[in-house]
Length: 331
Image (cartoon, rainbow, N blue to C red; front, side, top):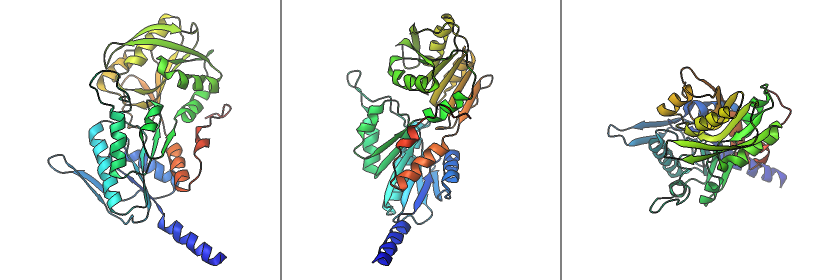
């Protein structure tokens, strides 16, 4: 009986071998994840027809495998999203046992509610598309709004970049640091950073003028003579970060650095950062990070975080410990 049990167990493990595939959005991150896990990156052809249609072919057997597809939906957002959906369909039709979409940066997450008449809830639409394509599970990081995880009718493992970024901040020397949320919505994230760093907490109240422009209204908290760490989940045009930094400097803040999980920096954002009072932007490689001439950007690798998440999902283990931050650990 024990022999038969172990034979059955080994057959199951063989049938659920892990395979990691990637599209064209961020191949370097996928390669680093595979290096951490200790498995080769799966062989798949992802290209385009002359008319722009995406073509996908998986060049190895994935029947009965536990397949993870790494693809952030960063710019070009629609192209990368379609690549992901088509890859999922190809893998599903190739009889994969389970398909997990690993989306380090989840695009369209900002459109999570009807804040005006006759507008879509696009985050819910994307969740529906992924489920309909055949995704069985989603692994993502720092959603713009945590309720987006509830838009899925499949399991979602939501990781956070805070453990990676905080460890980097702990290696720096700050003068009486204060963590600042650039808006009220980011207060919970800023509070977590402040607690783990033993720093103060402040908020910048803002008013949004347009999709690319914000105005800092007031600063709540003491920042005079203190080093400031602005934390946010995402920056694209850098309007929120730059206006917050300006308001903080006007109130006597010392050094100002910014930390974001996803730096999807546009041309406008690059110009604003160069002309701002922010000395450094610390981010992760959840998306390919562009260089901005004349401005310091520090990119932290999240391959170990995502790789550990993938390993634990494959082995049906808890991912909760990945949220923990060591207050004493130095990098």
